[in-house]
Amino acid sequence: MELFVLALSRLVPLLVLISLTLAGSRYVHDLVLKRRPGAAKWAFAAVSFVGLLAIAPYAWRAVLVVGARWASQSGRWQLADLLHTEYDSWNGSRSETILHQWAYARMGEEDWKGAEEVLALGDRSPQTLVLTGLCQYYLHDPRAGQTLASVGNESGTQLCVRDYLLGRIAQQRGDLGAAFALYARSARWEPGFFPSTFHGVRLALVAGRTAQAAAILEGFVKAYPSSAADPNIRLLRDCIARKRIPPDEEFHVVSH
Image (cartoon, rainbow, N blue to C red; front, side, top):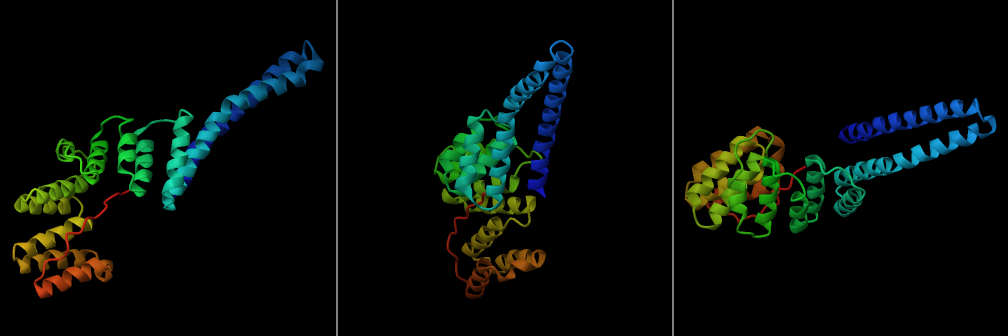
């Protein structure tokens, strides 16, 4: 449905431009017809050609951006990146939405540096900062924490990702209490965001709080019953039962 809406949003203006070109061609045809009847059809053809030639770049950009979105939805990240690159070379819009989709394509390829470069082409909106911080985190860039911490609690921003990554950074510097609090806050922003649940359970087990770990996990499974068969859920249950600490899993939290 999203792809259909995107295609329609590009097609409607294109049809309007074609209609205006044909209307202008007909107007010139009728104007010339009164003075030089033999040249009227050539005037019509010339205006139509020039008009369609002017519309062609817009039509090609529409094909590229719709194709890039289709490729992303199909998980064909390299193709999506190539189409976005071509779209940009044709002076395509560098709107926040377009740049984020382009960055997501590069993230899908785990090209974090390339994704960060794309994000730098636009404004530093809160969501752009979250994605930039995400790229910096996976690049082990020490600026990641500062970038993520600069994002306020604005709506329309993936705050669960912000707090999850800040939790990972806190955990890596050995501040397990702050990390646990950040994972908990991430889960409050988005209860279905599993990486925060996983690491919240893990840190509870690290601290020897088995009952708390079990409560966190079972609360998640109760809210999302279809997750019960997930291998990570089974791993956590087994670790809770055996009072063992699961591996420190590094999730790739790219979303679309």
